Length: 599
Image 1 (spheres, rainbow, N blue to C red):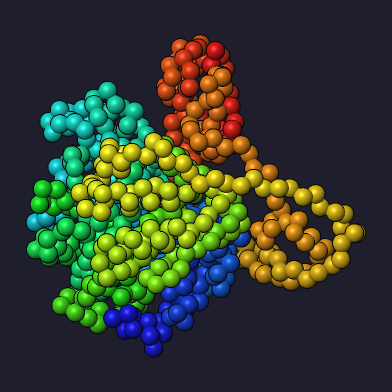
Image 2 (cartoon, rainbow, N blue to C red; image 1 turned 180 degrees about the vertical axis):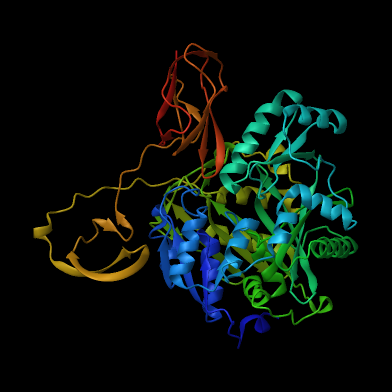
């Protein structure tokens, strides 16, 4: 089927603007290039020389640094569409991918939105209304409230009725962002506040809701593809049960130890849910699977991060099909013709330090990036060596995907591919992936969504070491010969590549700019034991929980630090009294900065 996806076809769309960044923007650019479609990138001030910008045919500045100032700035994106003359927009995932207002703003300008209709996004993008829609379609969901939370008392009442723990979730998001597990009534207020804050930061909407938290479920989701001619198909399931902080680490297809009868029933349920909201384009219906039963969880009205494993087992290019469906084409195969062969596994290479199982964000500059290769290996990366991962964006660097004839062969192939992958400059999740893939529970498929955090022992795990950059003083310009260099410039917000005669700096500067000394880093969120409470990474203080004169204990949270869209607790490492508090909410800090002093 892959040959029918792109070969010999040129889309009616001529120029696609990708309203996103990182590896998904690169992924879309590659398929567009194969289909003969020109691409337009948009970028923040921090992404001026990012990989997706370098690969696109054109690029336009959005301004700003944070997501709110750039990739969530509707007017800036609409301006880039107008200036570039793009006739379509691909939203990727995250940011505006599930925002009905953004989709309408695109289509009202006569520009094609490569995604579902705004009405479907409204129904399914809102996790509360999606629960109601699924129930109307005859698909049972996880027990929960079908209205936004307004008070911690509502969480307490729900927990008293259904039992603890319960889950608070972002109503307008996914991917584990804005989700908090509440173990008791005492945690309800703080969990609500934190979940709403994360939801606002990542999805631009603070609404949250509560549902029952299943004890030992597996997360199994179904990929669907629907056109505008009334055809809706399920392509196959993905198991995404290896998670931490409710965010996926490893995904695979097909789901292991999953009865084919259940697979067909789940696929049919996914089609019912999709048809109930008039859905078209690519989408994913997520379920929790426990004790032989499955429950509707939510529908993601967009492409998923883990879509490559479905592509590997079906031979379909899902991005190409997104574009073809948005162009008005009908699916040219039936449900019976969907083929699934072999087994695929994906690991997310995040810039996180998994030392001791903490998974602390690790922003910084990649000093080297050696990619794996060989039979059945695919790498979808959004960064290369010398690129910088900012604290302001998601920490996903790349996705490593393998295919093999069966699951055990795929598991071993992934371990081989990881052993060939060498990344320095930032810590990554690769050591944790090795621990997961090597464990008997994963090999035997007895793990669940809680397994990584509740069972897997990562206490002895160490993140990858990052070498220290050496700064070489630059000689005076008049001592250097002049050479031609390709540099970038912006004219009215559009990025251009130009060639200039400049001093030959040799190895003084890397391909992305001059070398800079690294700040000290720390593997744990806390102080040194001396009473100086230091942050382990660059980020923004979102809340300070102590004041001068407060008595604190070891492990008590001093402040909350947001880095790479995750909140991290910065804790005291000694008992004592707070002598100084050096930060406030909204302050930016760097790795090693002292935020409080304890006597």
